[in-house]
Length: 113
Ligand code: 5GP
Ligand code: ZN
Image (tube, rainbow, N blue to C red; front, side, top):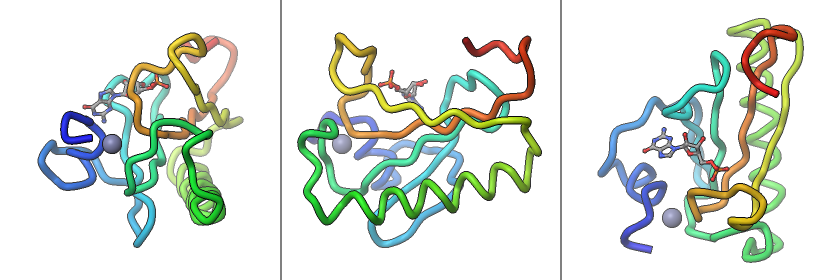
């Protein structure tokens, strides 16, 4: 847990571009923007993946995803938005602190496939 890069971001030990924060959730721009406005929503409590989430963590997380989605829509006016959540190395997870990607889509050549 102490080595977790996203825990360090929540604690302010590593800088991040904050998009949203409440008691349970932190959201920030992905350091490697696959499209403009690519944002990650994470629980403040360290949980590795969806299987480790406690039942009472899911509603605050998704309520925050909805708020951030609306903020992205208002700010960047994308034509679409992908939600993505990788669980496990086999599924493409590279940071083992649960996170949901919000990836705004601007058209067929926006760079994300
Ligand atoms: P995953 O592949 O685990 O689903 O996604 C991890 C994401 O975390 C990647 O998109 C990567 O760019 C992002 N990321 C990794 N390290 C940092 C960091 O230090 N700061 C920020 N803002 N994003 C990070
Ligand atoms: Zn963590």
